[in-house]
Each structure stands twice: as structure tokens, then as C-alpha cells.
Image (cartoon, rainbow, N blue to C red; front, side, top):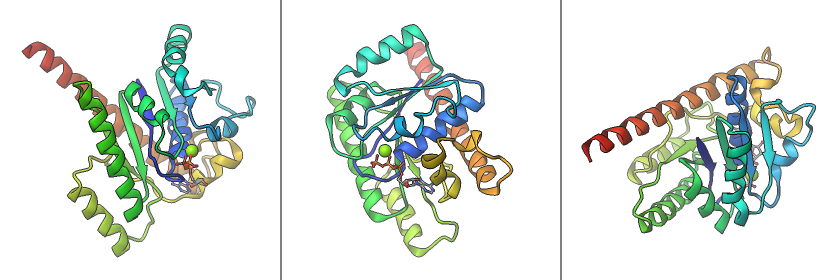
Length: 231
Ligand SMILES: Nc1ncnc2c1ncn2[C@@H]1O[C@H](COP(=O)(O)OP(=O)(O)OP(=O)(O)O)[C@@H](O)[C@H]1O
Ligand SMILES: [Mg+2]
């Protein structure tokens, strides 16, 4: 299973969610490989310390043009259960390449007009790219950095998501210190101090997000089988 974290907007939480989801699957006993296609190499930096990083998470930073070869090599050598691709927050070729190779593209966005507008642009870009190849993409918006008190601004963005017909993951990722700290400690919430309330809440949220994604894949696989049977 390959998941790309993509948005042309910077700072929406692509690298944070990449690291956190890697931690959630690793804590469930799965092998995870992260492909860092961002030339700033944020996620590689966060996970640079091999003594801190969970052993079942590996990272690599191939050049975007080498993505296909890199994926083939990793699958042949290690065959990880999950591959996550983190891209830069810019409209560049790496984003299209990552989405083209992924089974699912997650588009993080905070509940602001600017983030939702950008998410919808990316959704249209991915759809147009796939449609040129006669395929339909699987993508979902992930609401990130949601504030605990629902403001009228947040309500507006939820209405906007419906108006733009943007499919989104049910679980919302809240604004939490545990997510922010991953960039400093290199520890995804699942591998941080679980006794701290912020970490415990982040783990609950990430497990719910992981489960939403797994259910979506089960449904997609089932529909694929039905289509195969009907053909
Ligand atoms: N849910 C969250 N709660 C608290 N802080 C968050 C959350 N998500 C992201 N952040 C913080 O927001 C900042 C930007 O996040 P991140 O680096 O993951 O974004 P990005 O989309 O990868 O950015 P870029 O486009 O620059 O690669 C970081 O400081 C991160 O710690
Ligand atoms: Mg990033």
C-alpha cells in the first residue's frame, strides 16, 4: 500500500502526518518505508537519529525522477507493509509523480479558506492527470490543526468542503503539542511518552485515522473485485 501526502501549500502538515502515520502502523507491528521527495528533507531530518527512530521505519530520499526505480527496489528488497511519500509544499513535478504512484493521496488542510482552496486545486490537478490516463484517483482531504472550540471560520470551511465536493477522511486531526513535538524529538506519538494526555489523545486520533484509511482500502478492494466479476 502506497500513500502520498500532498499539497501545493506549505506548512499544512504533510511531514507531520507522514511521521505520525508511520508511527501508528509501526506500533501495530508493520514495516513502514518513508520516501522523502521534499528537497528540504524535513522528515529525513526528524527521523535521522537511528537510535530514536522506531526500528520498523526506514527512510530514503531519492530524487523524484528515480521514484519508480526506488519503489521497485524497496518492494523487491524489503516489501514494506506501507510506503508513505512526503512531498514539498509546492506545485512541482514530484507531487504529480507521487500521486501517480500512490494508491491513495492524502491532502492535509487546516480549516482555513486558503488551505481548502489549495486542496481543491490539488484534487482537480490529480483528477485531470489520472483522467488523461483513463484512470480515477483515490484521494481524501485530511482536516489538520483543528481547534477544539469550533469557530464560525471553521464552520464556514466545513460548508466549503461540502460545496466543493471534496471527499474527506472522517477523523479530524486536532492542534496538539504531541504533533508539534515530533519535529523536535523525532518520536511519533505512538513512540512518545504515552502517559502524557496530549500524546494519549494524539494516539487515539491517529488510530482512528489509520482505521478510516484501512476501511477505505477494504471498500476500494471489494469494489475492484465486483468490477472484475462484472467484466
Ligand atoms: N495537528 C498539529 N498540531 C500542532 N502542530 C502541528 C500539527 N500539524 C502540523 N503542525 C506543525 O505545523 C508545522 C508545519 O507542519 P509540517 O512541517 O508537517 O507541514 P508540511 O506540509 O510538511 O510543510 P512543508 O510544505 O513546508 O513541507 C510544524 O511546525 C508542525 O509541528
Ligand atoms: Mg513537509
